[in-house]
Amino acid sequence: MPLSTRRALLGAGLAGGAALVVGCDDDAEPPGPAVATAAPSAPPAELTVPDFDPGDWASVRAQFPLDPDAAQFAAFVLSPHTAQVDAAVSFHRAQLGWDTEQALLDGIELEDAVRAAAAAYAGGAAGEYALTDSTTMGLGIVYGGLALTARDEVLSTTHDFFSTEDALRLLTLRTGARVRRVSLYDDPAAATVDEMVDRLVRGLTPRTRVVAITWVHSSTGVRTPVREIADALPDGVLLCVDGVHGFAAVDVDLPDLGCDFLSAGTHKWLFGPRGTGIVWGRNWGPLTEIIPSFTPQGPAGRLTPGGYHSFEHRWALAEGFAFQQRIGRAAVVERTVEQATRLKEGLAGSGVTVVTPLDPAVSAGIVCLDVPGTPPGNAVLELREHGVVASATPYATSYLRLGPSIVTSPDEVDAAVAAVSGLV
Ligand SMILES: Cc1ncc(COP(=O)(O)O)c(C=O)c1O
Image 1 (spheres, rainbow, N blue to C red):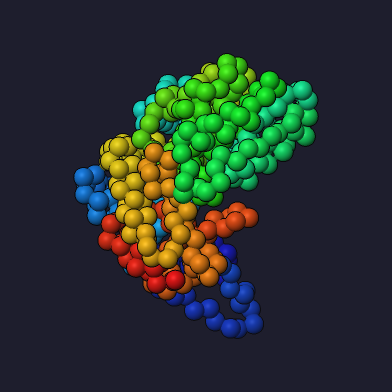
Image 2 (cartoon, rainbow, N blue to C red):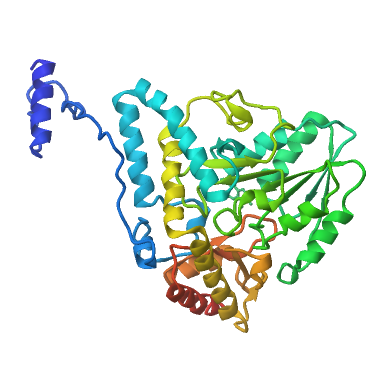
């Protein structure tokens, strides 16, 4: 049988939903994989995203594909795409598939629209935002781009995630600069703004050129006082922040934080497309790019790593910001903090140690817990049996971690309180 005829038959069979049975005579060619022959159809010209009611939390939750039978307290770890983000990803993917060259040309404006959406959501100007694939990539750009010498020091802390620690290790290898670390608190639950500022400032030396901190510690849930630290630093010391667990979990414009650079993945609390992030910079002058840029317009463009990307995700980030904007940044943060407080208060007296401070001034959405006698990994498995999805912190001292957010509800927090209390 000529191949073209076989393809046509397969196509007809598949289009009609029929199974094709291939005979077994000696002359027959072995069956190959089904070959689709339908001509591709032109993608829609306009992006339309599903509507929802931003004032109704059930409607907000319904935009996520997450299993509705489980209380999803680990969704912030890596974003489940909203229906809106998924619609945008599909739309851009279809354009890239249909006419790649044109889509790439259109992408120049789409990337500008993402920066503009970032600025509309988080403050500052569009040109102050570099686009990245993750928090880690952003930290690499910042710490990899600093021109330090072996006489200089970086002051960091003992609470940061591996991405900051390793970016600083690489900075030392490259420049010889020394990294000093201070601990900002002994007991996370008792951390205060004054103590954290004081301990950090006491770690400064005349050689300190850079301070490298994390906005919200994923190890403990403590939120560091970035603004107060910025105010306490001497002129000329750069303040660089891993901001991922504060971004979309704290209601503040980034320029008001007072830091110089902040890197955040937009695939955690913002619930944007996976594989996206931003670096916001006040003044990009001190950084040299380490990856050649394809969009060298403006200082932040220069620091946006070049090469072709999974552009459908990057361009869909505008919808991630739009989704948050429709609900309102303050409303999202209020919903998150309200539930985090309810969780912490609910567990008081349960026998479980709440590691994260109760005070929202020094915490955000992450709630870390120590369950006596139950290792965090075991607690995660046991909670699953009760329909509660949690995670364990990936640090030397590991805790059980729950992140209430816009995909959880106060009722689910109460269910989590009961399930966690039952572990003791
Ligand atoms: C504080 C902190 N920074 C960075 C990361 C990594 O983020 P990304 O995947 O966006 O690089 C994590 C965890 O995933 C984290 O907890």
